[in-house]
Amino acid sequence: MISKKVTTLEAFIVQQQKKFPTATGELSGLLRHIVLAAKIINREVNKAGLVDILGAAGTDNASGEAVMKLDVLADNELISALKISGDCCGIASEENDTFVVFDNEEAIDAKYIVCFDPLDGSSNIDVNTSIGTIFGIYRRISTSGKCTEADFLQSGRNLVAAGYVIYGSSTMLVYTTGEEVNGFTLDPSIGEFCLSHPNIKTPENGRIYSINESYQHRFSEEVNKYVAYCKVEDKATKRPYSARYIGSMVADFHRNLIKGGIFMYPAMTGYKNGKLRLLFECAPMAFIVEAAGGKATTGTKDVLDLQPTELHQRCPIFIGSPKMVEQVQFFLDNADVAPGSKTAAEQQLKSAPVMAIDG
Image 1 (cartoon, rainbow, N blue to C red):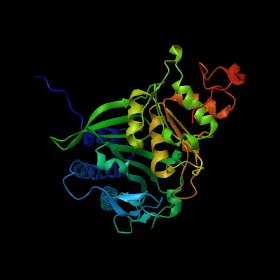
Image 2 (image 1 turned 180 degrees about the horizontal axis):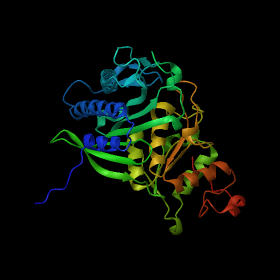
Image 3 (image 1 turned 90 degrees about the vertical axis):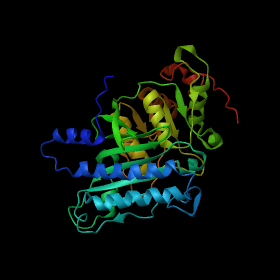
């Protein structure tokens, strides 16, 4: 049997670093420590039913959501790994009210800060459904000493790397430094992430839409028209599209990135800016999808162009295959377009009668 050559994540990081003669290795070291934390989180996720780490921790996070026990574990593991790395001067996490300063001697003058959602989709933990970790790495704005809030309040255009880990039927790490997106699958027999999905390119178009339709009564008329458009039968545009919604952004995004599709969490009644966090979820995922050839918009501007004004700022998001994002953008920009249109690019359909939306 001829074995296939395997490229480990460690070897891949070293290869990528060699492309930049002036690289100091700090970003590479930071990624290694994030990977270490991910391996520990993966171990705990895989034995969740065997130990006392299922269920709620009895507290709420900074966004007012119930904290699960694994949320706390994942948050602590990432903070610990990043602090001892010496390559990160502070972090901001969805689970903490404010940013955390690393003032130990090794870390205080480090160049980078990290924003992360330690366990996205944690409400699915108890039912053995895919969950994940999302992270974004920025170069600090301040030059030395303790990091400040301004170091974290940067637009996604300033990201130097972003990625996610999905804990599913297999555990995968997907990350980018802005040039290309690569995916690595954890081989439990050797304890290493191995390159399995090189240079990921999301399909230009897709047939999957992901949105929590139970909130339909809260969505804008334009969003509901697009959802109705997705359901109309039309052979020319290969509709109806398939509805797929897991309740974990990582899981929905990952499927759509590979197969082609769109994930949506729009503004709605009661949540004028949507429910997802810009720094911890939306900006990192937008950075990844753009590097893979996709698009991400709030409905009015590119997600990566948003300038955050607070750590836990929320934003609407429509993200995925470029043609599908353009399609929903057309509905958002044209309130009178009919959801039964054969293609959202046909401007003459603006005056067509509007299809009734059930509910």
